[in-house]
Length: 227
Image 1 (cartoon, rainbow, N blue to C red):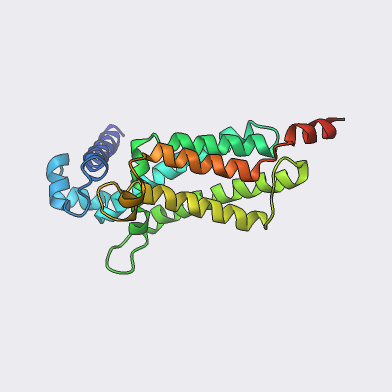
Image 2 (tube, rainbow, N blue to C red):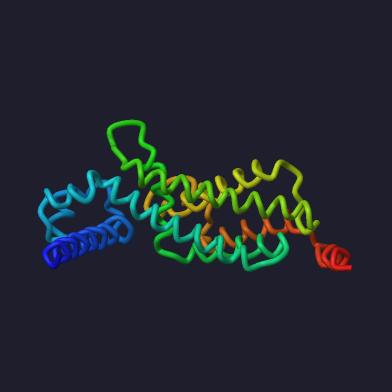
């Protein structure tokens, strides 16, 4: 038993070193494309064989980061929205949580989501990709429920199908986050951002969403329902 525990502990420690090294390389130094599996093994002080026992590809390592981050955000969204009563309050909490996400250095992971769905050659562990898919779908489910509640309690302006609206919003938010975090790449983001940082842009976008979706007279609507 002691031998098994020691082996498992060493495996966990090796995996943690690998992830720590890759967090620095992928997130901080943004060297995903240039980094080799051999370089990762050297920096993590493990053999190349040991590295491949834990992760088959660099994309698997990246997918692990994305999956962990997405799961954490999904859990947080469920917690903050369930603690609110009206749909407007739930939506405000959800959007505020999204704003907080923009302050996390791991936000840059979202710019890498397309790598998890390669057209060819790069293999991704299916269970990791399924985790990302499941969590994003769960976020859509949470938002759909909020929008449907908003139709019932009168605190939200919902003019289209609730599920379609939720899918549209989550897709747009994910693409916006991904696009805004590609800081090192030339392109439209650099051209059109006019010096505004991601927090400015994202806060403005979520504020616009709140203005469109949340009824300005919801307090009167709430008071009528209570009576």
